[in-house]
Structure formats: structure tokens, C-alpha cells
Image (cartoon, rainbow, N blue to C red; front, side, top):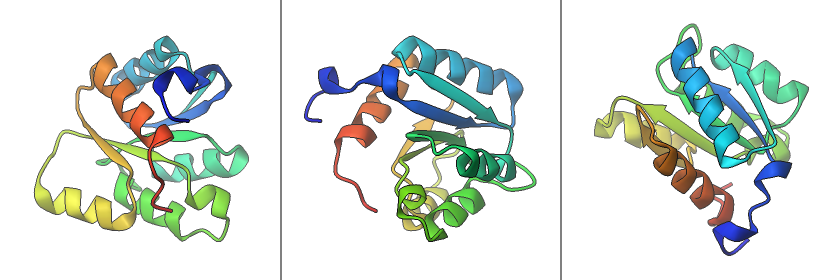
Length: 138
């Protein structure tokens, strides 16, 4: 995949992990507008892990601040798994925080990209294109 025109969005399955139902709904709708074929939802890191194990998504869009399992804990758990297919799922973090500590911790844990809340359709698509076409860290 070398350009955005080559991304077959309709064949992709995304998982949105966000505890705020309204925000989650907006992101799900945005992903559908972009053209993703399947968009599933989870309300926290624990249910997100279960959803990943039930059916591997091609992409995860995940909030950082959630309870009982936050985005960083979810990311660390996903990157620690033995399955290479699970470990390498691209993850885009949603955050209302851009403090360097949070960013550094997420980068160290293996996040692929960040989007500051509330995301615009353009920022979401740009980040998704970048993680799907760019070099993979894992």
C-alpha cells in the first residue's frame, strides 16, 4: 500500500474502544463515512480485549482514559500477547491530553498514532491512512 487510493477500506474491520457513548458513536459514524466495512465497539479496555480475541480487527481506535482498564493498560496487554497477529494490530489513541508523559508512555508501550479529541473526519482519516500504509513498529 503506497497511496491512500490503494487502501481497500471496505474490506477492513475496526474496533472503537471508548467509554463515552456519544464520542464512541461519533467515531463509529466517522469510520463508516471513511468507508470501513466493519466497525465494532467496546466501552473499555477489558471489553476491547475480549472483542479482539473474538475477532481480530484490522485497526483499533482507542481512548486513553477509561475505567476499569484504561487505554495504556489495554495497549500493554495487547502488545504482550503471544500472537503476532494480535500484537501487530495498528492502534490509534484518542486523547484530550497531549502531556509529554502520557505521549511518551504510550509510544513506549507501542501506540501507532494519536488523535486529539474531538477528532475531525480529516484527522481521523489521515491517521488511519498513515498507520495502514506506513512502516510497522511491531
